[in-house]
Length: 464
Ligand code: 5AD
Ligand code: SF4
Image 1 (tube, rainbow, N blue to C red):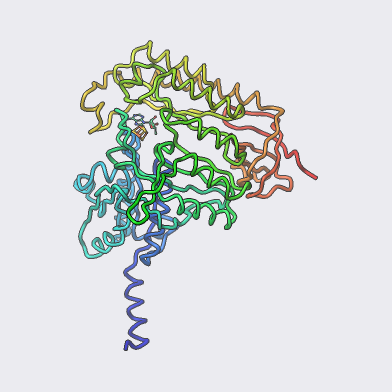
Image 2: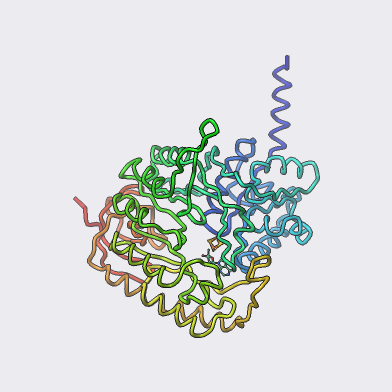
């Protein structure tokens, strides 16, 4: 049998060889959710998580590849970390996520201070990769999977406020929008077992969380069929999944992102309307207001279809906010196409929009077959026009909110003043208000008294 001293020595040996790891995340909500899965996998393997780069032996950067500027930001960070490596020779760098998948070992050839590259479906192999690096090698794992959903992994809630959390319900995308790199970096679409999703949401609620956001690249095509004794049962679709999660407790708010307009069904809107705790906010990326561009983008819907979905949302839930993504200056976009986008913005009157310049991504259909023919300055000009219009619309929308009262989930102190708190209403608008006796993690009624284009200002309306 092993003596106590031997076990202690082994423990010390293992401890001395376990890295302290700092995870840095760039990009979309999905990446933030993935970093929490990574944290959990590393914790189980005996590693500890550092709270800053300074105390870390290993920095893992979870990256985004959606536009060139997202990649340039990561490249810049890798070079910045080189200086730190000069001072701390033990410090190693690993690249995770979409950029790792896109560039694979090319990334290590280009950035010689990177020791490890790991794609989004290979995180279970991270502990092995770390061991490899410890043995003096560099390692890359980038195989994509058709089945991996990390369903059994309980994410560690990194940088969480203990109130709201992300739950990843599906992975990958196979819509192949012609501009988009995601189908290549995140692989085929696959849905996670609904039982594990509901269990995760219930567990969060029991721990005091009051809001979950169900995440997927295209949540409306969520579909999971269990196989029992080799026979597939009826599949669970997104409306049914929402129904199940929303039924956990009326005090648990449920959000979701992202919806593809082609798949936004009335069945989902019905479920939403029936459950007041499903938040009145739908993110519905339009990308362009021109049918010609939508066809070139392979979006599989028309402006008329999109507007019909917007009408349906407002029919079922007149108080629902709608947000979007849009791309300015896609291949072959004429001034007429651009004007059609502005016109669509005037029609829909979004509450918020993420607005981008087209960025050509290697390997996509557009990069292979469509010239990136709008000059950069012209893309910027069109983008700025959309931004200005949207700013005006958001401000006008917010002005209409003055005088209304909302239930707000209090999240924490306002960044500007300790005397004020902030929270969100069901429509996902941020409300800032005098603290009074309000406590983060609870629901309070707040009356809107003033606004900016981004924020509603208010006062507690339910003070005793
Ligand atoms: N260039 C610019 N924006 C893009 N998006 C996706 N790919 C590109 C690209 N190549 C935008 C889309 C998408 C959002 C997440 O990013 O608007 O909805
Ligand atoms: Fe990219 Fe289109 Fe899939 Fe969204 S739906 S991730 S834009 S391919």
